[in-house]
Image (cartoon, rainbow, N blue to C red):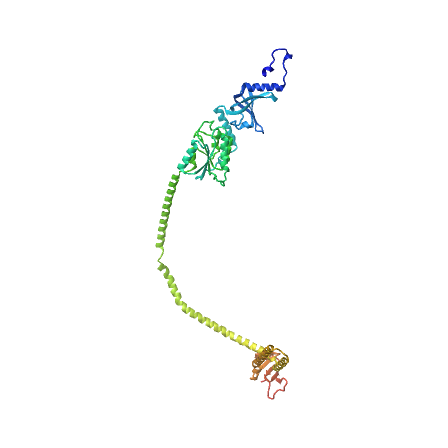
Length: 492
């Protein structure tokens, strides 16, 4: 088609006319047909990552620049992320972009051009990640002394996993979980990062236990072979791991970026297994040694305390000597107890007699006062009136027609009342007066002392047959004339 577009040198009027789209389409077919896939070396310039996931960047040398692009679907197989300043070798198809009248290279494979460029890129990446604090010592976690479960992220078919398992079995048999990954080539970095994150995602509630320690391991190789462990995703996954992680990538002279982010770096996978667990025989020997030392220490301490106890026992006095003085004191107190009890009883008896002697007059005065009160109460009663009232009540009761039970009750109460009346008559002070006694009152109060009688202006003396009113120097009988020869009660 491009030949059809060329002028054959004839008159201008014979040249065919084409549209712009036809021309750019013909150019695109010519470029793609003439070159196909090409391999170009250069330095990456300006890099743009669109929101759609496509990459747009320049590939240049000291004189010219060519535009490159990598579509989102091609980015996963690119092998690396384009970075400005890297010297790379790209492979792709040459084409053109008609809307801007420019040609470009669609890149689907990229690799670093030379080890020097690769090392420069790794150094820049290391500095950038270190600036974020991913390699700080404060982030490092201690390695557990005796992990129950160890998670290993490595290839399941290589010699590395066999070396790790063999070393663990020789030193201290431990349960091992293997997360199989590719350790080089395309997609290896993503698999390693997923393996680290997957072990951390285990919570122990499922059938698989959560590891106490992780080992990321790979055998030796070239710098290009180890590039998967320099990937930023792997480094960030190692730094973010909550489980302590040992990096064992390559040989002792090999260094990858995961070594900086790991909690511990092992020079070889075998050395990582040695770091993970102690030697069981050494532990048994150490425990036996400590047990022997403990036994000797206990024996020595027991012997020292037994010796000390013996020394203290010899320093103590004999039990008989300790009890001798208390025994003598007890004997003296026992001998003195009998007389002391007798004296105490005598003292108490004398005290009781003294109290009884002091109490007797008070009791007699109280009894006399109660008797006087009883006499006054008896005097106020009239036996005749009481008898008349009883007779009247009997007559009234006789007129009442009561049932036999009520009559018996009333009769019983009447008998009780009669008995009480007879008892009152026998115990009343009237009977006492009949035996020759008299009751002296002053202003209605009974006089029991001469002092009170001397102070009274008038006295009333009650005899069995009547009362006598006595004044100073005279006497008269209440209701009756005084008897001849009576005289003054208080006269000379």
